[in-house]
Image (tube, rainbow, N blue to C red):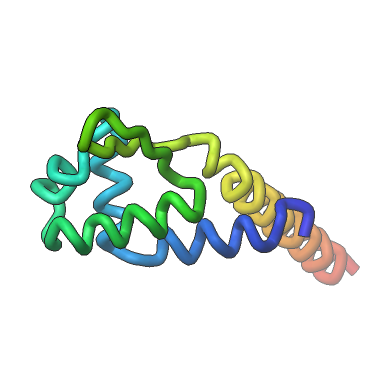
Length: 110
């Protein structure tokens, strides 16, 4: 796979959880602390921290510490590999469909 199977796999695994998607959605507008994220999702603060660790390990978010607070930011660059993989899959599917249509037209045109 040209897009790094382990990167795409790790990204997909991190995105496969509804709570992690909610965390990413909360971060779309900018950096938030763990407490601010916890106020926006239906899980406890410790659970948010666990989900943030998975997202950080998958390089989907970055962390910065200011005093005792940890702020998390969505890293859109992390989705570049996944998007390239999906775009390539889409191109391949469209090309296969075009070949199928051409074959059917050839078969019916005989």
